[in-house]
Image (cartoon, rainbow, N blue to C red):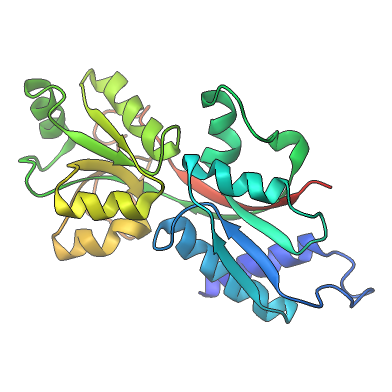
Length: 258
């Protein structure tokens, strides 16, 4: 939470640079739209950010989860909100950097309709499998997938999301065939991963860390140039000789551009 407080302070300062001169804002609750379901990494970071911002601004910062389309639905609600400073949004790489290139038609233009206020957090991603998959490292996973084409289902936080494209990149680099199962966010994907309905995913470390430590999921490799500090025993894709498979994720704070 200490890190979140620092992020919140920076965001608050960027959002209201004239706060010391005009104390009228904020005089009511601020809405923070999180474009993914409750229980996922975006929700986790959003609630930490809201707590820190509320302490700095002196008003409640209320979370509103609006999931769907890899974060696009929630961010669209931010873009179309009244530009009065009382509606903010937590965006991810998926909704502002990936979606414009993967959707035939976007409901908003990130360059024109959104004010990009502040980076909130960088977060590594990790490739995990259900324990029923008989592999312990990336080499074994690739060999298994080649022998069993389209027999491994992988979950993602939505079609076109970074968690989807990270696996597509692995498929292309390793020349393997996997079946994509999109969800409305990471939280429902994790639920089905734990139940074995899907057998694999590349997701933000915080949302699966407790399940890795409990043995309910098996970490194979971090999709990054370096190991995650919370999973020091898990090698990176660079160490596994797949350096192009890099999907470090990030979340930021946005507002309506007007």
